[in-house]
Image 1 (cartoon, rainbow, N blue to C red):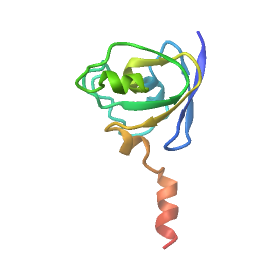
Image 2 (cartoon, rainbow, N blue to C red):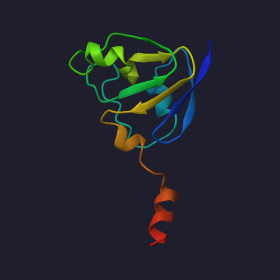
Image 3 (cartoon, helix red, strand yellow):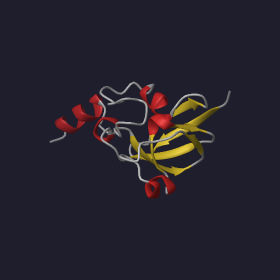
Length: 114
């Protein structure tokens, strides 16, 4: 068993993900509320991400949500990939608004600065 660091470019957050868990399972461990995980089987397309750097193993993804061309350039479903090295990713799917939302303290600071 190996564990790799996964970094979310959109937020600068990172987490450790063991090689037998999907990137989505690791992302859920960040404790963000409202991450829409969908079906977790590659059929709904909610967890679309783009792997900016790093290597991963992948399972079959629905062509309805990920085209061969997208997959060839690293756009995949987080539920269908497992890290095989440290990974940097950006969120491009429907879960972007939840993963990339500011934390409560940041929101409070912003509202008090006006």
